[in-house]
Amino acid sequence: MKLSQILPNFKKNERSSFLGCSGSGKTTLAEMVMSIYEYSVVLDTKHDLDWKGYKVWYDLKKMIKNPAERNLYRPERGFERDPNFEIQTNLFEWIWHRKYTAIYIDEATQISTSTNICHSLFDLITRGRSRGISVLSGSQRPSGLKQEFLSESENIYCFQLRLPADKEKAYKFGNIDADLIEQKNFANNSKHYFIYSKNGAVTKPIILKR
Image 1 (tube, one colour):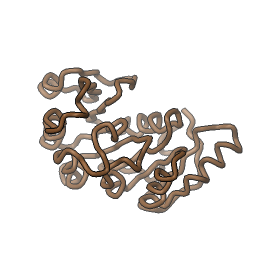
Image 2: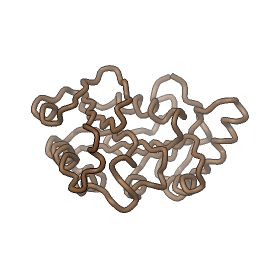
Image 3: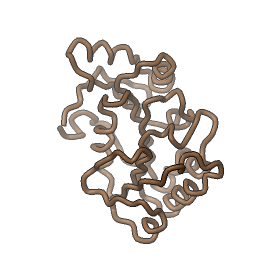
Image 4: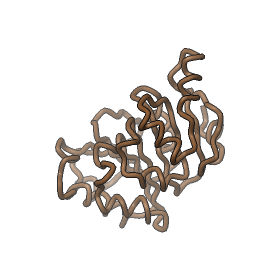
C-alpha cells in the first residue's frame, strides 16, 4: 500500500499524531509516513522498534557527532524520569540546530505528561516549522499527553481507543468519533481501521494494509 493511496493530502513539515491501542497499527503507519523524509530521527522510548533502513544508536553523543540520514535512538533506562531533562534537551536542541529533520517520538507519554514537557521539545512542536522540522508522535494514551502534541497537529491518525478520556481527546482535537473505529473493527473482525483527521476534516474509517 502506498502512502498516497490512504493519505493523499499529507505534506512534509507538518505535525502528526498517531493514536491507538497497542497492536492497532499506529506504529506501522508512522513508519510508512516517516519514510518520506530524507533526514529523520526516531526516539524509541521502549526499545522495541525494528525499522528497516535506520541506524540504531545507544549513545546520543555519537549520533550527534556522526548522524546517518535515518537514525533510531534508544535512550538508556531512566531517560524519561530525568527531572532536569538533560538528555532530552541535548537531543531536541541538536535537532533544532540541525534543521530540516523529522522526529518521531514513539509513545510520547514516556517523556511527557499532561502538565510537564521538556522546554526544547515544546519549542520543536510549536516553533519548529520555521526551521523545516517535522514532529510526529505516537501514543496509546492521548489523555496523558501535553495538549500541544495534539493541538499543533495538522494530521491526527486515530486507531482504536478504549478509554473514554482518550476518545474525548481524539474528538476534541481531531473531530474524530473513535466509536466508529471500534464498530468498524468489530464488524470486519479487524483491529486496523483508523480515521484520518486533516485540520479537523475527517475521513471515513480506513483499513491499514501493508
